Length: 296
Image 1: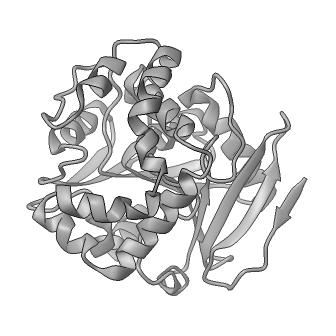
Image 2 (image 1 turned 60 degrees about the vertical axis):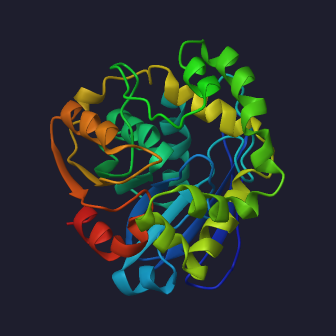
């Protein structure tokens, strides 16, 4: 079963899909329904409401059809107990088939990188190109952990996924109390470039909406998502054959640029751009170039 809304043309046009196993997958579309498709793999925490422009009408002007599904447990998508990173492409195939999308580019922000690359690996005939904004590599190689990361999060990396989820859930629970304030919190703790971007009211509104929606079911999905990212992802990143574009700020305090450089070194076909002095949310200043390069 598939239902879709009739929201304004520039989005979000929201829909829900009943997957073959009975779960509900929620998604949102932005921009031109006849435009070139881009599948968005949202960050962690985030949701189908994640987009990378302050004015969604830009997608229509650029001829882009951005489709962003909620991962299990985020937003309005049902949880998937025991899921793995490699389970995500099967959900994506059902969504693409339902929407009549044959091939698509995939664009990820932050914690969505694992899922974008999993789709590329599992769906070589459906994924044409991959974009990674401020993403990290799989933990198959030693991570240069940032000093500000809580010890509980570092400890989770050495536990099986279920145990890591249990450890991380209380650490993330405070985020669910007033998630609309997360952009303000990030503005205070991130680097000057991110503080400048988050100082724009329209950017804060975008992030507040997507964070709030992403955490509507509580901290469980976020804890599970982070636990999965700390474990081997279940596929060799070095076997991703599509061209991957990476955009990463050298002053990204959320995902340090050292992690982006490790990811770039693991990929056989990659074009990495390191933005001097910029941070985790650089896409709000460079969205037009990002989408143009991804779809070129």
